Image (cartoon, rainbow, N blue to C red; front, side, top):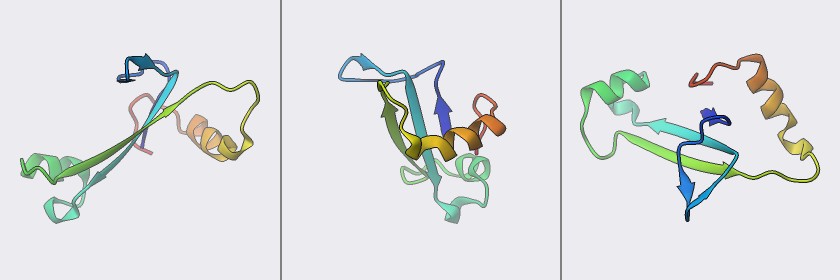
Length: 81
């Protein structure tokens, strides 16, 4: 999982969002680690990425507290969590 909150990479219908999350999945038939899978295969089915855009709200959504706390403890830009 990658979370971008200071360098959002994509827009949706020309709208930029303040935070973006990528859920990156890879086919383990091509390797046990993502770098191994990508390095061994140029097949179209090596990776699947789901992008989730976040917007600001007037009030905190406490359903995300565990995600934010876990991320801040392990924070490193571009780190896979």
